[in-house]
Image (tube, rainbow, N blue to C red; front, side, top):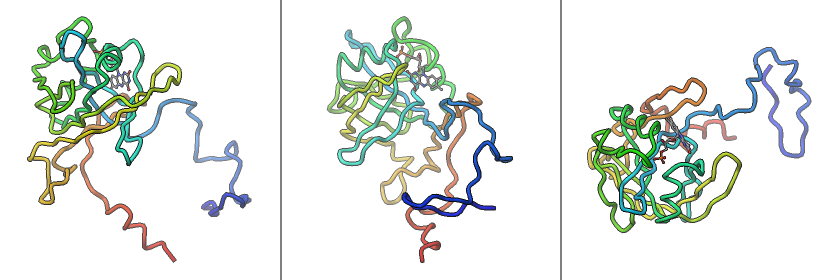
Length: 212
Ligand SMILES: Cc1cc2nc3c(=O)[nH]c(=O)nc-3n(C[C@H](O)[C@H](O)[C@H](O)COP(=O)(O)O)c2cc1C
């Protein structure tokens, strides 16, 4: 039987205790949530060498001003670089760069020239002291705004100063077309990369049919 809708002040008496549920199984407190992005956080180190790392614990944090959040372990070279320059880019790869993106998530720029090894091109982003990855179709230019220590990771908040995208992923209105971008998503449980693409409906619109 479907659960009855509740408000904040109304207790739903039809909902069963979760321990009684036959459909749901607890899989424990973990980072299993979908989708998480495959973002590359690109920085310069203190000598001006470009570095980039994969971040999946990341997303959009605020609309005005536009901000991203990224959970970064303090030992990452990227974290050191962000503190040094206070600027970074979020580069979004398309499906065809899954291998290169993965590589940037398994070696550290502290010891390796990762761009050279992966055959990727670092280009200085406009207005900020950070590189972007020329082969990836879009990037966000960000300035460090705040930090919060949550335990294993430091949540870095970056204000988005500008967004750049290759023409080939834009639609006729100049908006990013996800079916052209084909961005990757990471599934923390299976540790697999997936591709996003199919549109299923217009947001803030398809749900209207339930309005009374
Ligand atoms: C799929 C994937 C997701 C990752 N997500 C994160 C993340 O959200 N935060 C983090 O600190 N490290 C994450 N990592 C690990 C870093 O990308 C990795 O340690 C990288 O080598 C750090 O590079 P750096 O030392 O040059 O900064 C992820 C790696 C992969 C492969």
